[in-house]
Image 1: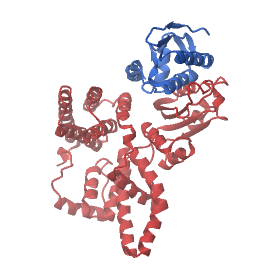
Image 2: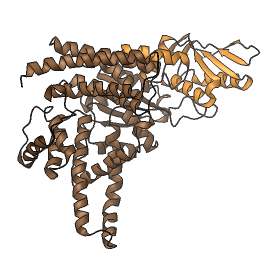
Image 3: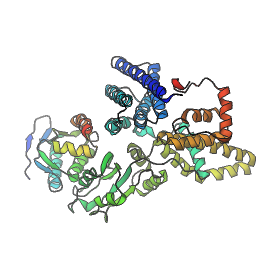
Image 4: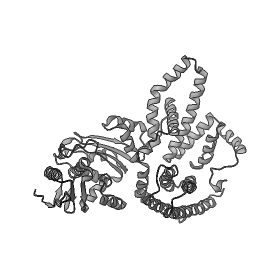
Amino acid sequence: MDIPALDTPADGLARLAPEGELGIYTVAALRETWLQALSTHEALEVDLGRIDEIDTAGLQLMLMAKRSAGRSVRFVNHSAAVLRLLDLARLGSALGDPLLEDAAPATQETR
Amino acid sequence: MDLSQALATFLDESRELLAQMEEILLRAETAALPTDELHALFRCAHTIKGSAGLFGLDAVVHFTHAVESVLDRMRNGELELSDALINLLLESQDHIAGLVAAVAAERPLPEFEGAPLRARLEAFCASPATLPATREEGAAAAEVAAAIDVGASVALGAEHWHLSLRFAPEVLKNGMDPLAFIHYLRTLGDLVHVETIADALPELATGDPECCYLGFEIALRSAATRAEIESVFEFVQDSARIVLVPPAARVEEYLALIEALDEDPRRLGEILVACGSVTARELEAALAAQHAQAEAPRVGELLVERRIITTGDLTRYIRMQIEEAIYHLGLCYLDRNWNRKAIECFQEALELNPNKMEYQQAVKIYEGISGHMPVEGPAAQAMTEAESLTSDGQNLPPFLK
């Protein structure tokens, strides 16, 4: 899977925007890409807007990244598929990104 | 007492109290609330809950209890009144008003509509601070411990199934998706709470992302049978550790669950409380009971042996512990809205010690909840005496004074 860094400005922030599946078939490759980005940049921003499929493995990878790298990993622009799974696992706030905190209660209302 | 008139009084009173709550909350949006207003807020919710209980309006009692718990933490300074919390409380006040309106219109109460709100309220009470080691709670725990010692059972668990799921590491590689199973549980009922357990999660650099490190603790409100729930996990049950605790299970079953799991017992306790599967008080009491059961007889005997106390003292002390334990057990039942059980405990405690004001009041206040069960024996006599002694009736709802 080819996942290009969209932008690597001088502030040391790597931006990635994986497409398609964030799941058991892609987590190994994604992990390598994220680790590499973190080794060459101070921080990593992952745009999840083009993720249309996510499973337990994908969610787990997000948690692993967040736990290991803390604030230097940021997930943004979560797609509907991602938000649905975060809502199911009640993990909106655990991943600690502002968008998630805003989004989680709103999606919870509809259950 | 004319019941319909009493109900009308309750409705009027509730509307007044709700208006008062709203007024205070709106004031809180612009300036910090003084302590007496925080207490006033709590009293509003407390009175509505108490009065609703007298009419068996369980949906109102249940929901208002969640509000009351948050307000209790606020007035004790354990919880700050943030903007988010003000909004949540305003929404909650609105919801109670809706419930009261439904009562007035004799419509069925929309019990489950409040569930998302309730979950959010409970989240404010589900921080580690809900397992406090304050002296008061500690004392209550010790007393319930004594109750266990005489064979009484500690309060019982929630009205939902509790599912504890730990999957084999290779489950993902085998093409199974644990969260898909959890999603599927929705076809059996209502996912009241899901707690993702990520304690075993490795570092991004060293872990195998295709291995499953996550576990789940789930509260599922469902009329399904054990077999039906188990069948959801049919394809993984050989390799997974799946524990189902049925509704209304004894708190001991949860203690067994905690012991069987790898995570830190204290953290698991908090998770079970967050799931609403046990209350903090039940859990604390049961844990203390476990401890006390091992320690208490030995300590008592030691004290007698060293002639610090006599056997008579010990017996009296144990007796006192038992009666207080039964009283606190009653409070645990009240938390669960198991009102008939609660009143039985209060009556029992009163029978053991007819002079204790706390028991007299509890019986007096809560006997209405359980459908006006008559008080008999020495308790009834003590009540009559108590009535003549205490006529202030401070804790009674206005229409019963």
